[in-house]
Image (tube, rainbow over all chains, first blue to last red; front, side):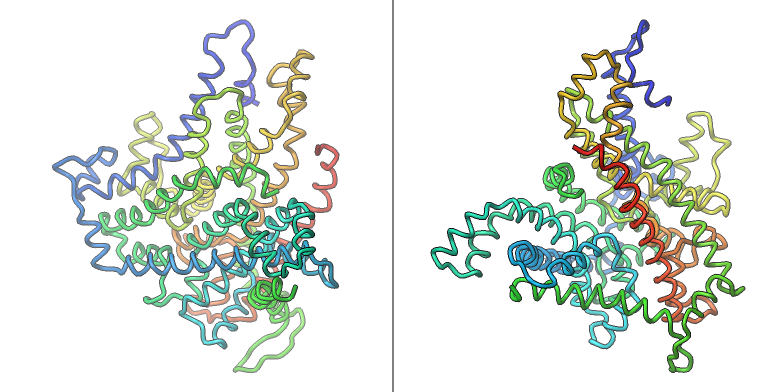
Length: 287
Length: 295
């Protein structure tokens, strides 16, 4: 209740305008949200002594060093890990978008037996985490001889991303006017052409939203890389950082640098796509 | 039609639906010396009653409910408060606040776990110095290392990371409330608090319910944070064990205990049932009761 009382116009004794209080609270929380990340990033560029002597200070000409980054790049294959993550994420997201759009189109455009059942099956997947099937996924991958391959991860991530993609894209397909496809059919345009040349371009904005929602959990996942592809050659960046930090936990320069290497690219991408992401979140696409 | 639906459905069924069903079936079997035999509900009975299993199981389940309770009591109210503040009319910089506060949510749970492990470390002393600077230094402790406080600390780290999700979803709903409803209440003489309590809150209840179920599913599926900070043993003395880490240990084994696929499947089945019950409860009760408020 104390929280809400701040929102009340304090009748009689209004020393501070309401907007100042609002800004103060939001600014305070912004600091709380960013402080830990900033501390890690600035200390990654400092000498060991400076890290401990003055953890909150910026690196200066005296304390500046890149030794942590050198150690990380020397002791582990960060380039390879990032590449693996990139390959897995791009392939999985690309296929989720394509197959998701195709399935959404089929489920909303064509009436057939089992349509409802399949729609329900996909809807279940939004709520039920795919992880719960891990025991069987692992034995399936063993029998397909896909353990320690990026293919295994891509396949699992497609299965993981499809339910939400089908749901969001179906909602979107429904808003496309029927006249459009009917006109094309009258001109005896093939169904394939209708989908790829008429529908798919119209789905672009929704696909951007789906892409962002699908990408984040894949890039950040530890569970499936740990279980399906823990080998050095197929390690993703999240697993790579986890293993590295676990191994060199006492080497502060290396640990801080490894974390910074994992954080900064994501933050750059986030800054570029944040408008897209927030529009997706706030447009009610996920309700 | 088959061309459009086929490939997606095939991958989804083979790598998601089938493994889940197969896991449910496998939980009714037991493997011994390479022989699998049908044992009915025996695995579940072992989990909840057998001395070596039940203690770990009930501990993980109880911890998971505590973990969830902290999220509901801290994450969602803070998210609500931030959303209400962000949606204040004519607020400048609201886009910037929104973007920055949401930032930690984008990062991997593993990275966040390590970041906080460093910040809370008594060796580095950042948190300790901070507490001293505001006069609370004597309350500092190695929170992550103590049995009594480790789970709560981890829950707060998770809350810190994910507060952006309730904030964003509630904020979106608040923006969608038609201005005339709010204006009407102001004309009728309601102050901001009354407007919030009587007009806005009922309208965002469906969103709060949805946020709750998303939190529930995510919490009962959590693994990465505990594994990154505490390892698969979820120490000290299993005090941070959640269903996710318990599942991992049961399936892959640890220390002297051998991993077991069928016991792992049984744990996964119980997690499935818990999540399913939560979702059902949401769909049938909460959703139905608040539907009349939707516009």
